[in-house]
Amino acid sequence: MDDGLASMEVCFNCLELGKRNQQLTRRVADLSRRNRVLRRGRLRDQAKIRELNSKVALLEGELREARGEVRATARNSSLPPSANPPGAAKPVVKKPTGRPTGAQRGHQGHGRKLLPPEQVDHIVQYRPTECERCGTALPPSLPGPVEARHQQAELLRPAVEMTEHQAIGCQCPKCGCISRGQIPASVLRSVCGPRLSAAIGYLSACALVSRRGVEEVMGVLLGMELSLGSVCAREGELSEALAEPYEQLKQEMRQAAVKYVDETGWKRAAQWLWVAATTEVVVFLCSQVRTYAVLRRLLGQKLHGWICSDRHGIYGKCPKKRRGLCWAHLKRDFQRLVDRGGASVPIGLEALAITREVFHRWRWFRRGRIGRSGLQRQLKPLRRRMRQLLKRGAASGINKTAGLCRRLLVLEGPMWRFAYVQGLEPTNNLAERMLRRGVLWRKRSFGSHSRGGCRFVERMLSVTMTVRMRGGDVLAYLASAVAAHREGHPAPALN
Image 1 (cartoon, rainbow, N blue to C red):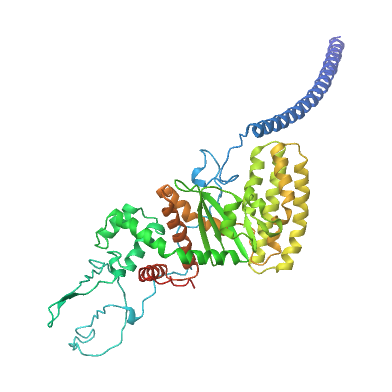
Image 2: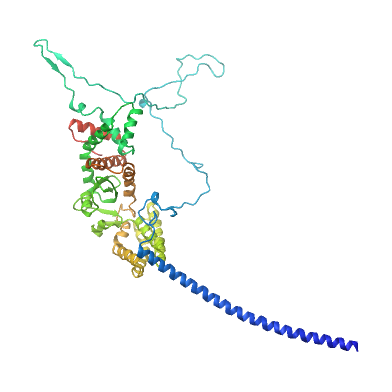
């Protein structure tokens, strides 16, 4: 009896467990269906959020474009890195190599070479007094080879050689008349000789020393006391001496086959400083305005050769068949598209990718891995990609992005001209490098207060940078130009 009751109780428990299991199974199935519904809803919500975020980014980009709120940096504009706003990314970010700083193992040193004996002013010999082995005294007259050489330069005190010019009066023994000698007019022009005058101008224009700094250098280092007015007078004399060489350089520039042109702001008596540069000639020009007429003054009324520049409006008046466009400036424009946000981002990113490929092919060409025909062949697909991209950007509906793309479609020929013209580079970096010294001069002295000061800037920068580019002695040429000017002779030719 007890066994039967126990069996019935077990069966009853199994039925209860089975019911509960079915209930739990139905509950799990319901929860699974609800979970799937919620998951699908979450996915729909995430897709909607992504769609809304993209629309927000597009609208923000259009709003920034409408307000002009794309922050100008050194990466997307002509702003120098020193003027970058706080928080702006660096124009060039170099990855650390992990190597120690300084010269690397195996680096070939570049120490100063010893001068030949004929260029040495004094020779001091150190002779042994006794034999290193046995101690025998060695006579001073004992000959022997030079085992080691070391040359040491020293600044003289005073470093300036002072010459007094005297006019002597002689009395005639016959009539008693006193006749006086005449100091040459070229000597009376200044208390500074031609080489010292050239050094004063060189310090002021090339070494970026202020006029008061030049006055101090003359007194402290060279022992020549000068007034501030004398420094300005030497600059004026040097400017007059270089007038003819400057005109000669302008004529050479106008006949050059390829020239690179750029300009920067100036102050006071002039508002702009222009530069035209080749691999052998550099010419600067100060002007009050930035117009096409000034460009013609610099390069001649009839433009000759090829001109590489940025996209400023004044260069747009030059014949397109004579222009080359700077890809470094284009890279900044494409970066600005990325910074603008919204629909401009993919256009800017693809344009930057094409730009990297262009520079990559150009480096191959410069290193001799491909020839001119190979460069042209490899740039053709990049040119097609860029044309299609610009057409897409012109139809994007974003005003500034579309405007940039339309202008670049018009300038497609100048963009790719470097691949077909011998000696033409894809960038305007030569003019940028030459203009750097003028920029530093402007930051130091805030420009020129007079037209005469502007002429000094033009002529000194043009002549000194050209002489240095040609491997000449800058100070020697300036001194010879001053000496010729004082004698009334033409300035020496710039070879």
